[in-house]
Amino acid sequence: MLRAILLGPPGAGKGTQAAKLVEKYSVPHISTGDIFRKNIKEGTELGKRAQEYMNKGELVPDDLVIEIATSRLLEDDCKDGYLLDGFPRTVHQAEELDKFLQAHGSKLDYAINVAVEKEALITRLTGRRVCEKCGAGFHIVNLQPKVEGVCDECGGKLIQRADDTLETVENRIDVYEKQTMPLIQYYEKAGNIVNVNGDQELDKVFADIVSALGE
Ligand code: AP5
Ligand code: MG
Ligand code: ZN
Image (cartoon, rainbow, N blue to C red):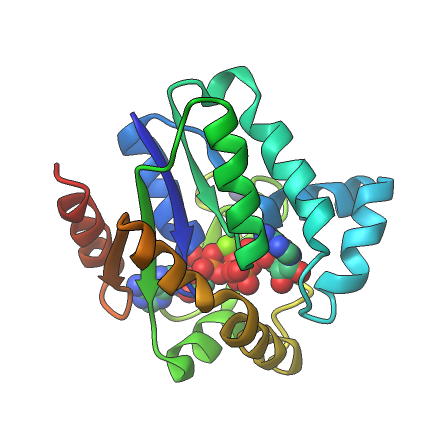
């Protein structure tokens, strides 16, 4: 059982660590960013609304995100835990999540904060490649696929995310600092924050998270 959120700047490695954590703890991985990208790909109304903000590196409006995340948490597979990735990312979202969980007699076990210096984030994001088909993440230097441009997991084509251009990356980091960083204090106050140094080898970051969660 694990009811947790992953907190951290764009490129901190939330998605990378989430993939490993959900396997270990057998809980669903809920990434609001992934949900929006799926909707954009499918051309839904939600996708169209979200895309305007995402392409500029701005946050999608709170009401829209809260509705999507909380309705996802009501699905059956979340009964025995979940790992939220990229939600909440404003204090208002965090308050609404707490209210929602409280109303369902539940609460978060951990807010896992993965910290990485700004310079490293830019290199990570501009060099990131993702599988068009299954969403698996790679990096042109740090996490190379076995065959260039091809996903190790499913053979799909590796592409660059639309918001991984230098200009948008810089804005995403600014937006993080202004709107999301205050959440660190929010969860410090709540007493369930776990701070991890994300500026280390992937496996070391993972080991640190697991040991901080007490296993
Ligand atoms: P989202 O998809 O959540 O993007 P993000 O927060 O910007 O974070 P990323 O996915 O870019 O980074 P990550 O931390 O997952 O890093 P990764 O593991 O891939 O959100 C996108 C957009 O959707 C937002 O801008 C917003 O518009 C909207 N949105 C989503 N949720 C929202 C919300 N709650 N409210 C409002 N709007 C919302 O790693 C990055 C790269 O680094 C990879 O190439 C990886 O291989 C490499 N790497 C990872 N770990 C390491 C390591 N330890 N060492 C070296 N390289 C590493
Ligand atoms: Mg991600
Ligand atoms: Zn794939």
